[in-house]
Image (tube, rainbow, N blue to C red; front, side, top):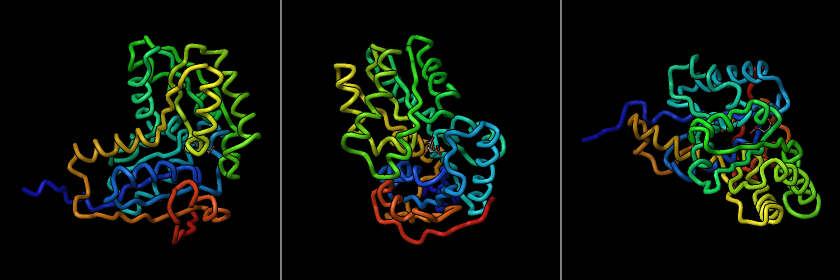
Length: 278
Ligand code: DGL
């Protein structure tokens, strides 16, 4: 029996404030290699992490409306800040499934902690929204303690490719020491920003040193790819006819995209198109 839904061949739409969301696309392509993906990076208006909730919701609605014009079967909000602020607005506006990165990351973190102490790092917007902490508390009936720390300098460091050595080490040390003072018993840390997986090694080293124990890092992008897979399966939307899904990339500004993009995506980027949705 063919259980394929007629919409299963349609692409998944993914948006981010810029190129950071390629870390989520990388995880999606690894978990779901047959899926076609249409990506929109709002690189003309990046960063979202320092902007108000109202502004991020407004930009997110525009991004979603562009992707819906490409006839997508599902929307993935790759940007943590946009997920924190605009998931509800997008869900009430769209009639396709909408998945953000925060809830999947919170579920993985909850499952991974044995000391019931979870740290969260992200942009100023994500941290001040309190969304990760809210979900983790809900999932644990209030038995898990959380603390968070904004790490804004990680974003330019990842984009510059400064992911090893003295400078990112000092920056990581400063941020993670602050977290250690707030939550000394932490054993799990959520990388609550698209850019942070690029700094994974340095964050891991500094964490292990500062907390004097092995800290488990949670990459929300990887957790999200697993949730997307489950959702597609449960809605019979998995694209089973395809072995190599296509990736179509749109950006609102092309500067530096191809150099930075390759690094975040982990594969060569081709055929990037600029669109005007402003
Ligand atoms: N994509 C953003 C996030 O994951 C980081 C970059 C920005 O501030 O726009 O929160």
